[in-house]
Each structure stands twice: as C-alpha cells, then as structure tokens.
Length: 172
Picture 1: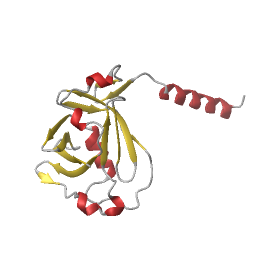
Picture 2: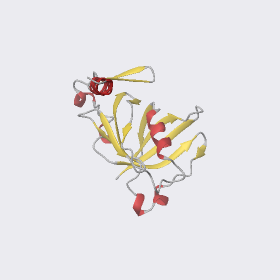
Picture 3: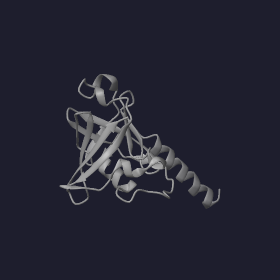
Picture 4: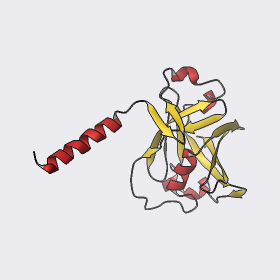
C-alpha cells in the first residue's frame, strides 16, 4: 500500500473515532454529559423557555449597548440570531448570521452552559456590523447563567476581556 493510502486510512480512522467519541464534551474545564433522562431535568422554571424560537433583541457589553437592533436587521436578515432549546435532546439550535448552529446544553438551576458550538460554514455577504457572527457564538459559548423575566430570556456571558455580556432574547 502506498504511503498516500496509508495516510488517508489513518486520517479517516482518526475522524471516525473522534466523531464517535463518548457523550462527553470538554468545555472550559467542565464535562458536559449527555443526559440519560433529559425530559425529567427540564424543571418547571425552565419549561417556558423550551420549544420556542427566541430572537436576539439586544446585546449589552459591560455597561454599553452594543448597538445591535433587531429592527435594523431588515426583512432579509430577520431570521438571524435565533435560539431554540430542545429538552429531549438537551440541545440548542439556531441561526447566527448566516450560519445555522447547534450545541449540547446543561442546566442546573440558574446556571447554564453549552458544549462546543458547531455551525455550517457559509460565507456572510450581508453580516450585521453591530454584532458579528463569531462574536455572537463566542458570547453564547461563554454563557454561565440564564434568567426569564417579563417575557425576555437573558443569557449572561463575558467577552474576551472579561466584561459582562447580556444577550436578551424574545420569543416569536
């Protein structure tokens, strides 16, 4: 067998093993386990969050508003920056700008954490200037807690410098 074929076989085997890995994703020093009975873990306080499409309304970074406005997205980008929680699979899905994304999630009381966020890789011809897709995904990735108040879902995160970020979503 040629060296090229041996290398290809090793790469394929490595990819298959890493894709078939166990139900644990390592993120930020904590293990995210696949839940054996996720429906039971969806406590009543989180139930109003489940099964809805949440659209990002605002992003506050530190004491400043990021300038992001859902109204400024316009009709052609109205589906950008969405988030949905699936309790049966303990997974989030959504649309950034313009890529779709997904990740496992774990919730304990007011604490919320996400596994590694994976997304499609489409090129953004019309990405909003006030909130880039990579920033949005990074803020989601760093989320630590959640709050539901007055119909708004708030995720509390941090930016690269450690400033608090509050992502505020409203359900459709």
